[in-house]
Length: 87
Picture 1 (cartoon, rainbow, N blue to C red):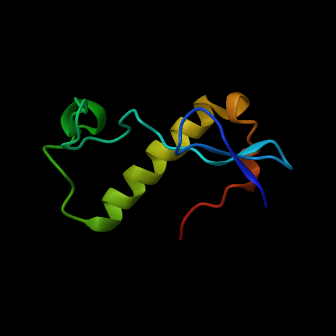
Picture 2 (cartoon, helix red, strand yellow):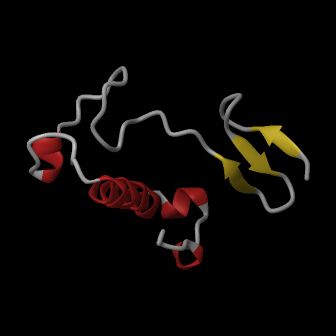
């Protein structure tokens, strides 16, 4: 498969399907300590801090990713029905 650079050195477009193969998100979708991340567990999810339970954290992270994909479904030419929910 041949790849070409899209909008940055990290974003990759599949030239056969003209769909994103790799797309690096640069805007935070869950709270963290990264530069420019001003999201809050309390404001976003009503939690006092990072969840202690890793399964809860995984579910929140997955829902954040899925929400981002739903918002940008048309831009990314996605078929959300093809995305499996993690077990």
